[in-house]
Figure (cartoon, helix red, strand yellow):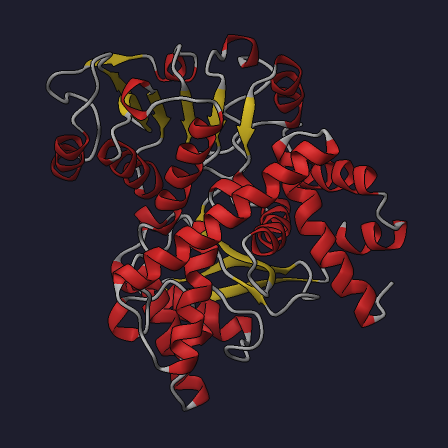
Length: 411
């Protein structure tokens, strides 16, 4: 199932069947409540004017305003944005966040744009999006965007509206109202899920081996947190290659190496290995932290890890997911494992609306409570219903969303 939108609808229908969800609610949730496609004219540095295609999907706002995500990449599709908005609805509900799923994106290659061109593109995105502030359709960062781009977007909104509204955009720099641990939130959440899953399986940190595919923002933070907790990170990979050391990698030194060289390759005290082989290592924990569909029908029979924690969005195809379930492999799904960023975005919103900003210890304590609470709920649903953790997470989330839909009289 190569289409991520079809995968999203598959997971929705699977969970809906388990919980006997009313057909009219399934129909309502099977398509975004609002999808916008528009173009952004940008004056390039050479004087040329180019048009960029952009999207914004608002999946369902039964629980609250749709929030988060602005993805910028050249091969972006409308189906990808629709699917990601549905995933965000599920993540918000799993994480106890009173919000619906929103996702936006622009078909562009940030690496081919100057800083000025990129800034004009992001400001144009906000203008064409016609945002209404903190209580409706709040954008945030995603692949290809970060705090700097969110700062441009927030400034453009405030210039247009004529008033300060830090909660109108998520994932901002701290001086503009961003939250502490905003950068680290997803990785910390993934690490917390790894630790809880290992406890369930009676795996002691010092004797547990971990392989991480993807060593960007999420993968590197996850590796650092797990290494600090005593876990042995034996292999990591990025877009350029993969490295391994059966005795364990020095994660702190590796992070510094990547900052200096831009890649995990040529790291001292490690051997380079095939990128695909990393997924097939005989380790206790496999963490796909890069792109979607890396665990699929072609390699699932060669996956040896008994525990997979999904840091990336959609790294396992539905076909592979079924095979892993039959084999008894525990998969902690993306809609639970990487919900940390959505939770801290919610904290960012609370802080911005109240003008009361928290220190790192406060944010970390609240994040830990949300993640561990969500993990326990999903584990209980899986046990009580006799289903996989993925289906359990979707059932747990859909139960909340469906209740809100019914109360509002939408079904």
